[in-house]
Every structure is written in structure tokens, then in C-alpha cells.
Length: 428
Image (cartoon, rainbow, N blue to C red; front, side, top):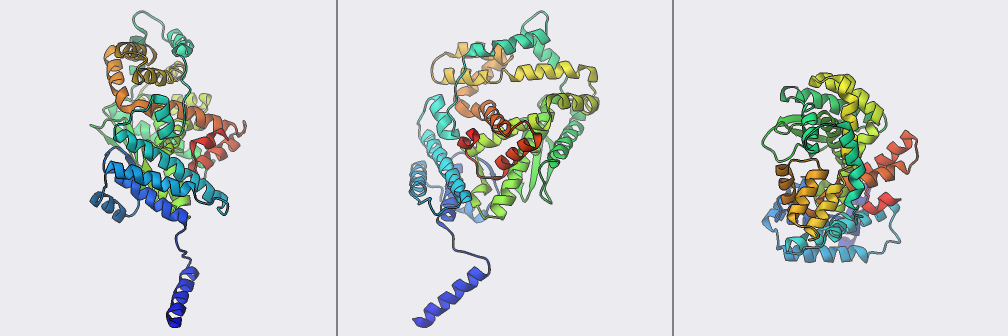
């Protein structure tokens, strides 16, 4: 027995000397969380945005997906174990890690409940899935922005028709789209690298595709590499292309994923950042960051100047129209919050379909057909829209709280990009 004990002690000493340590309670909880998310994804093909962990874990999830009822119970059990964990001995980073896991598990519980038939009201659903309880603005709040659009695009006929016709003039031709996208991504990368060190070996590949339900998508592949696909079926305007470069690449999704992978997964062994589930607080933060960063990378005057000097000529557009074009874009963006109010009223039963269509047509500047298609998707996506308009507002407020110095704001953004953050942290 003594020999056996001595042998075990020697093995333990060798393991510790080699730089390995037994998994902590947090490590075990993190692994259980990842495997839980992979199993939930077997019941919802759209749930998983990215996965670059061990193939054996995914194979295990596919072989033993378990029932949704069991997964909900597993989420509750794991959250209970984490909540009851003694936080006193934990370091600051481990406390943040624990808070992140608890936040994510709360969303998994709500998600599995919805999969089982639960239908919370709009604000309750947003809070349960994304960690924020939106304040819904009266629709009249958006009338001044609508008046500004009217002033910029005067004339006869319906406003949405005038705006649509004007914007159509700035849809990048398909044969020029790749060049414009690459120029936008390159400038986003250059400006980002002035403030945040980019890890060695990182990079993005850009691919033009068709037949997809989205305009553009970032597929993070692990190891600091991303594939960004741009759908040529969509008429992408110059402003959208410029925002795409920041949102999908630098310092948006690609850099966000890369820094979490490098600093948390590789350096700390935090496996929970190898999986990116939708309908979670992490997704709210990721999309909020992606929607905000074009403002930080390109302040208004610099955005117009870059488009006028580089993107408009590449796309074949008249640079003299850049100022008016971007003024319209700014006014139209102020209307984006209206969709959240309309969606909440509709899915909660406050207005009927016809009213939702009419309001969507007016405030989203859409045709009747486009408005109907948008409203018909509201019961499916429900509170999903909070990730963009509200996410952008909260990330902006958090970053600007660092002060007017651009360097301080970039440091605040880098923290959001590379640490375990929950939506509640945006108020600090």
C-alpha cells in the first residue's frame, strides 16, 4: 500500500512539474456547459454559430443528444452548482468566468423552455435569452428622424419609394463588389491595428457566394482564421459594405473570436469560449459590439472622406454625392429602434398584423410587400432584434464612458473583445 501511495504521489508530482493541474470545479462546469450547448444544438440546427473544440465532444452530442426536457433539467442543475459555489477563494478572472457561465446557463434554460412550448412576453424573453430588459420607446419618438429623411429626399410619391430609388443608385455592382469589400476590410484592419495588437497568424478569407438567406456571414474557423462570405444576391450599398468590414472582421466578429480564442482558450484553457450559441447574452454582446464598432473605427467625417476617396470610385459612383448619401444613412439609422417597438407590440398582442405592417412600412421605409414579409417573420424571431439596435446603444454608452480620448475608448473596447463579459458589465 505504501509503495502504491508513493507511486501515486510521484505521478502527481510529475504532472504538476510538467505544468498540468487537475481540473478545477470551474473547469468541470465549463466542460459540462459546452457539452450541454452541443446537445441543445442537436434539436435546433440554427442554435450553434461556431464550434472549434474537440471533435469527440460533438460526436458524443450527436450520439447521445438527450431530450429537451432532460437538457433543461441539466441546465438548471449545473447553474445551481455554480450558484452555490463558494466564490470567496476565486480570483477576479475566475469570478468573471463564473458570472459568464451562469449568464449563459440562464439563457440555455429559457431557450429549452421555449423549445418545449413556453412563450414569454417580449421583454421577459429578451431578458431571459439576452440578459437585457429593453425599454420600449413610443413609436412617435422616431418621427423627427422620419422628418429628417423627408427633408433629405424631397419629392412626390411615397417616402419609401423615394428613399428606395435613391439608395438603389448606390448598390455596388456585382462585378465591383469584391474589390469594394476587400478595400473596406483592409481599411478596417489597418485602423484597428493602430489601437489593438493583432495576434500573429490571424487573418480572414473573403468569398463571394449566392443563394444564402443573409447578406454576409463570418465563419470563425479557430486559430485566428475566419471565412467571411458575402452574398452577391443582396444589393449591398456602400455604407453597408463599409459597416460589414468592421462588423464581420475588424474589430468585430473576427477579432472578437480571435482574441477570446487566443487569450482565454489557448492561454487559460477556458473551453467555454470554443462554442458560440445564439440566443444567449454572449450573442447579444457580440452583435452589439459588431453593430457599434463602425462608429469607433470611422467617425462621421472620416467615414465620408474614405468613402468619397476610395469606395465611391471603386464602385463607380459620383463622389460628390457622398455627403448627402451618408446624411441619409445616419437619419435612417435613427429609425432602427422603431422595429423593436413594433415587434413587441405585435407579438404581445397589442396591435394586429395590419397595424404592424402599416407601421413597419412607414418607419422601416419599406414597400407593402417588404413590410408584410418582415412582419410575418416577427413571431419567429421575436426578441432577436434587441441584439442590434439595443446592443449597439449599450456598447456605445459603455465605451464612451471611458472618456473622450479615442485611445481610452479603444482600450475599453479591447476589454469587451477579450474578457468574459456579461451584459450587466456594460453599465459599469
